[in-house]
Image (cartoon, rainbow, N blue to C red; front, top):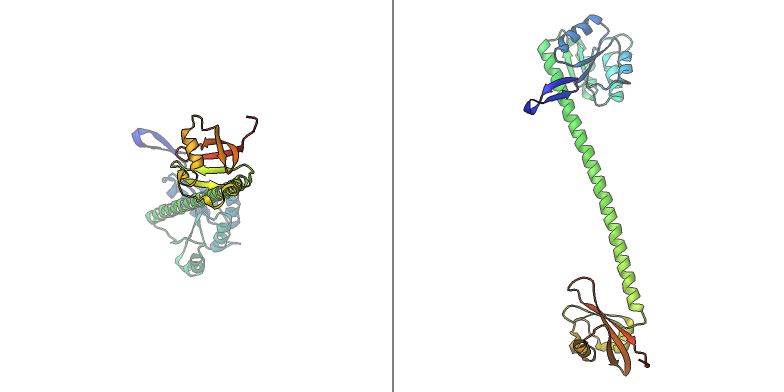
Length: 272
């Protein structure tokens, strides 16, 4: 763990990047370790492609640098297999000029990010590794953003589905309530805040027929109802004589402010 100075002189722990160096020549691995140790990397080494694959089975590696000419498994074969085992690692070949042609196909198919030549220039090699790490950081950020976008889209789709289900339920509940109100055997009349007729159930329509013109003022259509309501001291118990029958009118304000009222007509008990 490397400690760097952050804002306000605060100490920040930074996990060093991990390199995997694969070469069958120990002197090459030793030279690379000496060169790259100054950059504070965590360095893993393997003397063969198979040994490198074994390391990738247990270790998270940021950059892989492999020789091309190795016994039993050449570098491009190793890196193709490494891509399957550790797809987020950046893979590079460090080999002689004569090997460039043999690794071209691996570069073209994405198994190899970059070809570096032996003997190497120390500063070019160090710069190439920094560029590879930056490339990996960009890939990691893009992957994280993509995953976040997928997650957000999934949550949004679930929210939309839930809203649609709730809307369907609300619509179904509204239709059911309207059917119940229409089919109640008690006459019901809905009026808005301006006393315009907005609703009449079947029992009310049977009582007054075509004279109930929705949208018109109650006083214009049914003065025999509006006049007693206006004059009543208790709108929840208004005696009414309608079509030769006696009723008790009960005017109930709806729960939403300014949305009007509903009038319920109950047959009046002759004994009252």
